[in-house]
Length: 220
Image 1 (cartoon, one colour):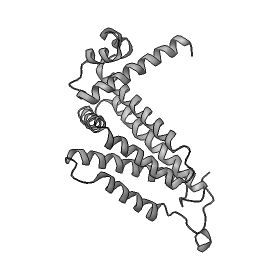
Image 2 (cartoon, helix red, strand yellow):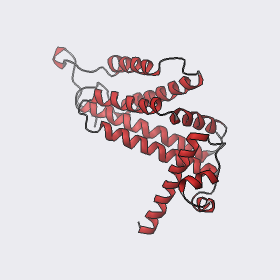
Image 3 (spheres, one colour):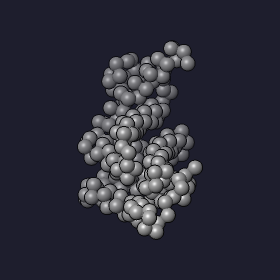
Image 4 (cartoon, one colour):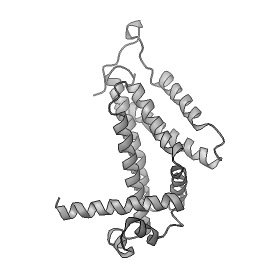
């Protein structure tokens, strides 16, 4: 890739990141391209050199935001050896970002409302699908590592992905319920309870393989 192409991609992502700052504060509908241009430090016309429409800018900004968040969380859990602790840390890190930054709940609600009114838009649907798949892939990797270390008792990668998909969907749905019901329950408590249920009931952590429980051979 040429330096010019790299610079153009970097600038595109820089504008998308600036847009996310505006969107998180004002919502998608109320934000203007002029506001995004001011935060990004570029002219309004420059934005249209990189994005054909406001919807394309929104889709890209969501994708860039999600990639950054996943990268930060994966960096946090990368040095953890115990797969159980790694899974807990991953989930809690995602939850902490949601609970400790007031912009995140507003942003998630804006994303939810925005996509509901544009279900026919296949390009936006692909962005949403990509966001969900990124989280599922990360969780699947932790589960597979847990099987290889003899900690989780799963049959194959397919089962690991099914559990990862359910966990990601649970977290997404619970966070949305938490917002639309006016924070009517303790979100951390609900997630902790579910994680204990998942770890002890379905993942079947192997405490003593010699006590009659076969240690899995690992996922290939």
